[in-house]
Amino acid sequence: MPDVKWAMKAREFINCNCAYGCPCQFNAMPTYGFCQAVAGMEIE
Image 1 (cartoon, rainbow, N blue to C red):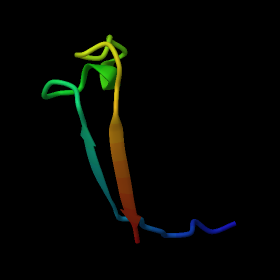
Image 2 (cartoon, helix red, strand yellow):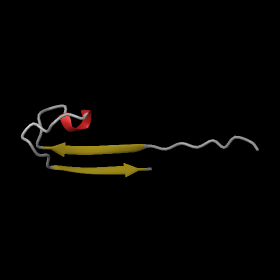
Image 3 (tube, one colour):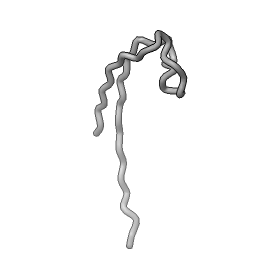
């Protein structure tokens, strides 16, 4: 079976109430004890 060439492009937009570098993304406790966030993606 021949290889199939493919590609994907995406953008991610995230904003939360934590300090810069969002500790939640690194398995740490949220800055203020809870996390409020909004996220969006665009995939082409």
